[in-house]
Image (cartoon, rainbow, N blue to C red):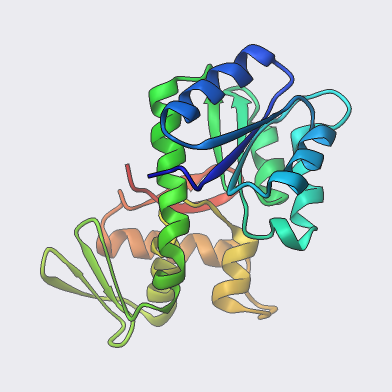
Length: 229
């Protein structure tokens, strides 16, 4: 079912590229390879992949810079960008999200977990266009009704303030996608000059108090996401 979806793997360690490529090919994806950021951009221009897996640290051009450059090109605005990172590279995660990363996968690579994450990200792509226009969003045990500004959990009605509702709907519309605070501010509060990061944190706290604290998770130093296993 993945035969028409293309994935580019960019890493200077050839054994990692081979491992990931093998796993993706078994899942039915079309796989392309590159071994540094500069080469990755050139291959991406030719292949037009649906998703790009980028290592952070690479020669000639690292993954952060490659992602930043591709995000500035119209043809890659909607392409999913996923970084590979060591668990100790939190600073790289923050830098990656700031230039447009959609997700992170920690090394060492575990093929089964990798495939689960990649499949989930691409399923998100298939459903986003309809979700963006949906009046009612059903996810996990929640029903989020945009017409009535009400949320139902297992049939029980939950009343949210307008901004709390808009924040929940934004996060839930793209499960597991990390939204930076800047993206949230722009989407929910637009250009209001009186809103700060603290405002977002307070709304998240109130939202968790009302719907439960396990739906929305914090990505330290970056932002928030609606967590779906």
